[in-house]
Length: 214
Image (cartoon, rainbow, N blue to C red; front, side, top):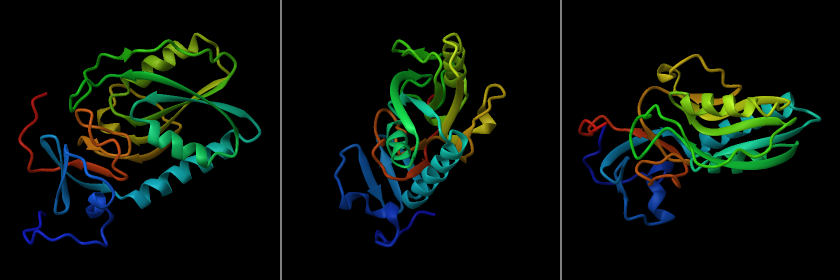
């Protein structure tokens, strides 16, 4: 519920973002934040974000013990997750980046996948596609199809978040941080209209928003 006191609680990590930076397009509103024209409420605190990343890294370390892996980081959203993930990997790691998305400043996937870069040479490698969130799964499905033609040693998916309820088809995520519902989220690499990526936690669309034009 929205607080009417106008006061903030310093013990709540979500309520201290302006202690660190000032962002004109992101405004604090008690226990909510305003990103451009939408209001968001807390979903995953920064401390839990880091616990999730460490858990995923531990599983990857165990799965690929003694092997070299190639992280294919999907820009722009997966960068914070990928950077934190690499810090906890005890493997030989190569990193490639790729711009691919089925979002275009919208709250839902368009269903049309745009791959803006040429695929790097991944032949014979153990590929881990690093995603911020798997929503419809269209982007992942298209990338797997294209990468498979290069005959890699293996293809895995590491996603910080997943929305199983809106997956267009069955899709297997090898390393998933947390499953969430249908609501749009921002923070930890995820954006709304290009803003909110730098927030250390994850925030979900609040109930008091006007219906989005999608």
